[in-house]
Image (tube, rainbow, N blue to C red; front, side):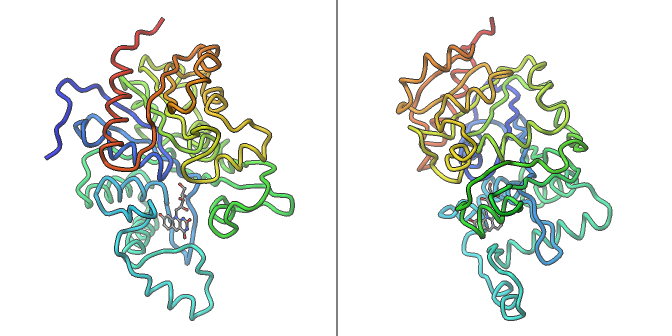
Length: 321
Ligand code: FO1
């Protein structure tokens, strides 16, 4: 039985996939589920075999439901790939590894979307059926696709990440649909009404950057009275997982924790960095952000809970100027 914190603040988290899921796993162990709202990136959403795939929504939901394949950080543990193997026989592209049980989620989502439900409604249904009580909201119900311009073409983010193993030089990140993407119901309200907003250790360009690109989100983060805490996904100049470092380097952004802080400096109060980045504290504080250091590597469940406790502890003692 998890032990929740006694007096708990209302928390809203901005999340991408694997890195965010680890921290949210820790947070969920110490925060009552009805106090936690998670706004999730949908720029990675893609379509395969006519099915709508929402990788980050699924990574978060599967993780909190205890279903995730912990080794990979995505997909369902002990899943089989019989359907994909048969699709390969029929000549389909099978580079995006969709497991048999995972496919049920995508079929269910697609059936509901085709019947007229919004992605936020479908997500609520999936979470309820998986027994989750935290509120998980897609950043937008509208079309939004993260595209990558390379030296030779423009491709969907999943093609860049999975099919081409992040091997291309990134010339530009295109947030396709951002101009028309409205925040899903509850996104702005949960940021405004929160006591603490946590920006998870996700890719600042293609996970958090997409959420910030949705109309009104950045403004809500500036306006909210919540204490806003971000955790750096960059440790000592590299990432734990994913292509954030390669992407930043390609785009001429220095690969450092302080570069991430800079991207959030118009709304952020507190920046949590790894002990390895202690020499950057002054540089971050020059941005007008309180910088704190701790061990941010999350290998075991205890690490996730310890980091979650640290974040809530720092936020509780922070006083806005
Ligand atoms: N990531 C991979 O590296 N290879 C895959 O084949 C793959 C399949 C996949 C299927 C469902 C799903 O929900 C996620 C999946 N991911 C896969 C993860 C995903 O591409 C990314 O990690 C996220 O989009 C980034 O957060």
